[in-house]
Image 1 (cartoon, rainbow, N blue to C red):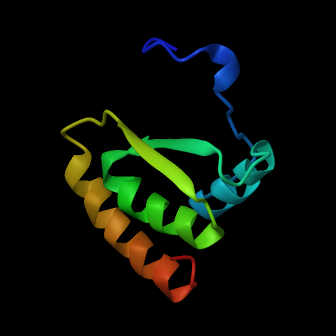
Image 2: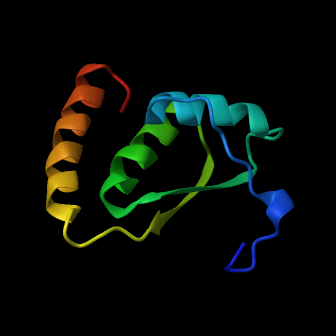
Length: 93
């Protein structure tokens, strides 16, 4: 909203416990599969989120990253590597 997006255009999914659930549950907000969707996540998570979204059938997808603390960034990238491996093994990407 601080960047000019109207509050009624922001849909927040609050029931998921992981990225696959979040993107799956969020599909219920989308009436037309061709609708433009923006997923906002952290820099380190954009690649995996986009791969999962494509696997789930999102068509018109954009991604935007939120800021992260420089101090914690290296550990997040290490964690994300293992999350990518897990999602590849589980056929989520």
